[in-house]
Image 1 (cartoon, rainbow, N blue to C red):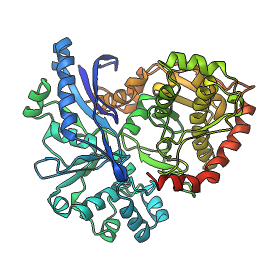
Image 2: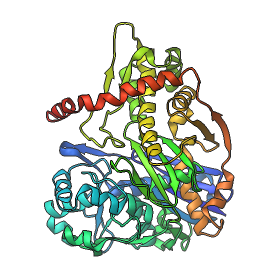
Image 3: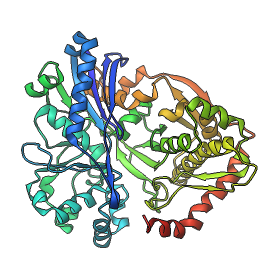
Length: 498
């Protein structure tokens, strides 16, 4: 038997076919267009997702026709904190608002005034912002009341695709609903009082499920579209944060993992939500609904290296790493704030911007490149410090994501946090879809639990902190931590001219 996993990434849509031992048989991906604009607009057209999925499946089917006919289960994962209004027939009424869409700033202000950021945080386990899904729904109601009235359900990205597969557009899972700030993180139900206070229709919210629950079967029309058999079980699936945790083998209480992709985060699996008194971390229910992971996310990881390649004219990451490794630890006191697209944990400021601090005439490209790797590592240390303040021990961290391929970056990260960094034998590009595949395999009965599916993930390498680098990074982190507070008002002034 095989498993089909679909991943709606922020930049690419991917389809992967897995064997029942969770080995990748084949995969296909394609970039998806994102529309950005004034006021914080960031959207994707849901029809683009479907077109790419169709082409991806056709490509895999051409090479593995029999394996595509042996699919035993399907699960979808995707970017979180989005908002797509659909009508009763499942037709999108607008483009999907991405997590990075911050047009709902005035709606955020209203929620903050009515509910309060602290109350919202301790109710939902998540941080209220202009990107929050409640603010997005309010934005639709305020700016497009006719559209709001026609909306049968507000969905996240993966839930729309699952709806297309099953012809049932009113299902979601606990991970997406919790990170969206739509449910009570403790009771796992929609809080009627919150929706009443905001005068929002709670009936426009999708049904809640564990990610491993079967929410339907592949319809005949969707099967024809994908070129596979109808009737295949479709699971609720989970958001990419929850799926990447599985793909990193972080499936048991106490496990810690780090994902270094376009964004980066450090998460810990706990038996209950962990609340930070300064609201610097957030909580997402795990894919099977059995636990809660506590996250801190930095907004710019891969974005920072992409910027550096362009800014310093570096043709590939191999050259990048070689040059960065030639500079000393600490980059001769050059510090980079990686806030190229605002920042999330622990700062939560969409207006903050990137900074090179300490630049002088002795610095060259190698210092600039290494300081960018170190700056992202400092941002992750910032998150690790918050977790430690809240009683989470961080000594051993599983690492996934494209950034984990860099040996020098792994060594910098291990020495900066500091902690032992563990690489697993999951290619960075497959971690999220592997998580979705294990969810699908669990729901289809291939595994008795997600933990049983994790047996196929092996550790391949451990990177310990470099002893002589640790005090260098300890000293520079103290300086790094003071830069944002000192520059905050200047960032606001620059942002006002955007």
